[in-house]
View 1 (cartoon, rainbow, N blue to C red):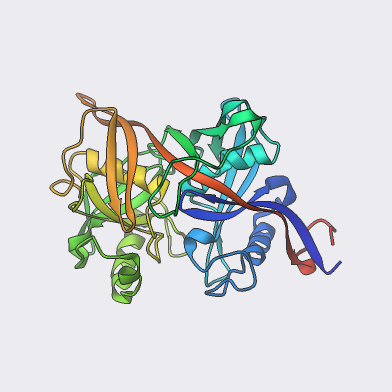
View 2 (tube, rainbow, N blue to C red; view 1 turned 30 degrees about the horizontal axis):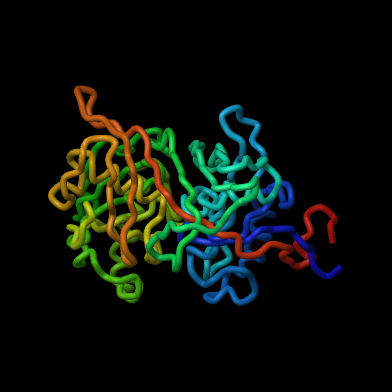
Length: 365
């Protein structure tokens, strides 16, 4: 056999897509795993011409699933961000959009039995330790992908998948503000370094010479913008306790501006070397927390937000995203308690993906 066949399901989750694997079908060693995933996605080429990737960071994502040994979870979800134009894999972040597909994929793979009506799947994000409950539509005991829920950035409508995020504060650092302050000045720029669901460096778009309402194409065409943001991100990563983040996608970057529509705040989200076409699910929670917390870069930009539970609406390049948040303000200060979103997913393909026999890790070839 000249190639190794690996079973997979291919799903769109939210505004991202990628292959979903059983963790047991892949190498346990992360170096060997990286080589396999690079081959699967065709990383190292801007078009990912030799793999399943789509030439964009939102289409070179991988989910690996297994039954969880944790009492609080049904499924362990291990995420990998595969690079587009270089042979590189980052296992440090998680992805909330790909997470949307974990519940449906776990049911399709036989890891979780489906109930008639809807099925709740408790998910542990291995990369961060976060716990999430997904509610999947399963009429007749099978996953339904048809419905009337629309999300900006995806054509048409589909069945809703509800995600309820728990214990999102300090996902990687143990603190909402890892630097100990709600605002820092780095390289002459005011930034909020925040860790809620996803560690982020958040700044005002105007401080980088932007309106905050540019399109993805306009932003990706401005090489000088990324050259200005990256040194700030690198120092923010150090200040947050991550050390050298030059080869890591964490912390992500968010730039905020006053809303132009009915939203509470406008945001542009970076992954971090390209612009997200919409907004990451995890990033949306961090940005919502930034809009709510006192003393952050969002002060003076964000519209007033209702008392908890509140729907925080964030404008992005292709529309808006709504995040339902529970929070408290009192003598103990600001507390971000939980967040929830409603997204959609769809199973696109299933079968086997082939990688070169030279990558054999268990004598499978």
